[in-house]
Amino acid sequence: MSLPFETTLRSLAAERILPRALGWSLGALLLTLWGGWLVLARVPLTVAAVRARLVSEAPPQVLAAPADGTVAALDLRAGAGVVAGQVLAVLDSPPLRSRLRQARDRREALSAELALATDQVRAARTALSQDVLAAEAQSLQLAADQRRAAAAAELAERDRRRRARLAAAGLLSAAEAERSRAEAEQLAAAAEALSFGRWAGGRDRRAGAAGRRALLDQAAREQERLRGELAAAVAEVGELSGEVGGLVVRAPFPGRLGSPSRWHVGSPVRRGDPLLTVEPAGVCRVLAEFPAASRSALRVGQPARVTFAAAGPAPRTVLAATVASLAAAPAGGAPTVEAELAPAGGAPTWAGSLLAGTPCAAEVELARATPAALLLEALGRRPTGTPAPLSRRP
Image 1 (cartoon, rainbow, N blue to C red):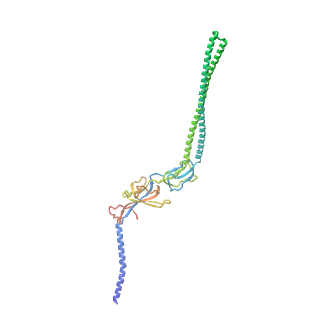
Image 2: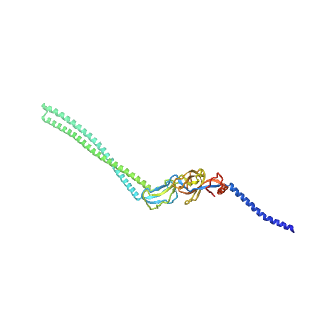
Image 3: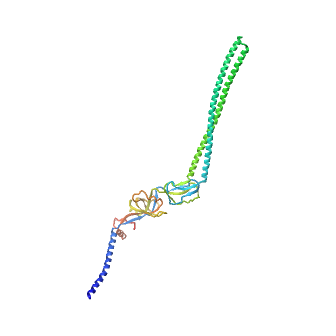
């Protein structure tokens, strides 16, 4: 009866030892894994930026009111993306539109006056040319009549002298000689009258032509004056039309709207009042300021990451980056180191949806160390050559 009892006791003892052995084995395995992680794992050591910002190489542009008026339409979506040429605001300026209407009416009136003056100049030139032609024809006619009268007078004079000789010789009666003398004197007087009439007609024609030329010159001067006034009126209409067209404010470049405008539809504005701010969507840079104590640990080319906070509908974004350059931060505050962070992967700039002014945070990975090194450092036994970590990324 003793043998079965002893066998039962040994079985019970073995059942107690097996869980204990398994527990010791599992503990040894976990201790081995922890030790391996402690010695072999590489924990990133990072330094966080005191402040970081996404800045644009082109500054924001303030769009001002081009003229006095009231706001007829205004894009109030702060942070909304815009494209070049997009209409952002429309102004209404009744005084400017009234001036434009008046300028257009004056332009039309001057156009009508200029057309009338042009017709008058054309008619005066036609009348002058016709008078010149008529005067020339009349002058030629009078010259021909004068030559005929002179020839007749000369012939009558020769006949008078011949009859006078015949009368002196008694071959002709005195009455015939007297009649011949009277005819000669009459023809001579007629020739002299034609000569005077030709001279007087020429004088009158010259005076008439001078008067017509004076009228033509006066009409031409009036025409030139009206042309000058019409050109000025056309230029004024063009200028006012440009100003009225300039009442439409457009985006000068792609970007997004800045802070909300203090104006609203119906607000009166003065020329030069700032309406909107457009932030450019061009090349942006991330500038981060780090504590001055990290200057010796920071290096160009170190990996980093930039976290952009959620802005409106845009979610929180984390992007990989590298340190592109290092410089001392501008004086005037606490001593810091300014680093420019470039997008990782060789991208020329940050994503187009990230615009200047987007809040962000940045941290740079200085080195990687084993947990054992960190533990020894915490115990004051940091091995030589290991950089002093500033923070550890979990």
